[in-house]
Image (cartoon, rainbow, N blue to C red; front, side, top):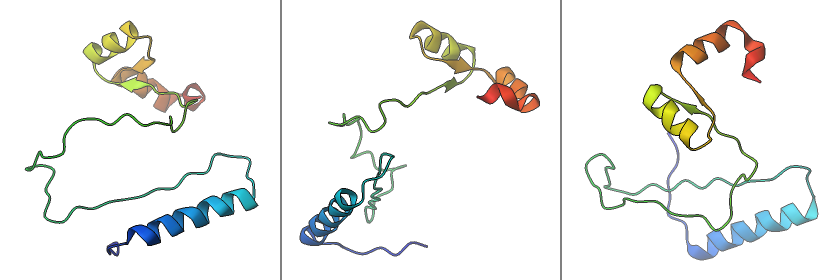
Amino acid sequence: SATMSKISRDNLNEAIATVLAGAEDKKRKFTESVELQIALKNYDPQKDKRFAGTVKLRHIPKPKMKVCILGDQVHCDQAKANDVPSMSADDLKKLNKDKKLVK
């Protein structure tokens, strides 16, 4: 199990500054990312719906990322209507037989 603790705002800001300074010191040829996980005590997302909705990020995390919708015929039709690549369960079975098609 993960170790959980409270972290102060100053410690968090200091850690972020250290990570950013390290990124400046040693430039890398890929986009670096940091993952932050937050757990809420006494909160069950299945029962409690206090937090609902979406948040639009200021910066797009991966602008060149491609997606493919995996779904039934209804979802595939919706994806085609929005010019999004899609695959059905039968298409996935074909991929299992011929691994070259995955690319």
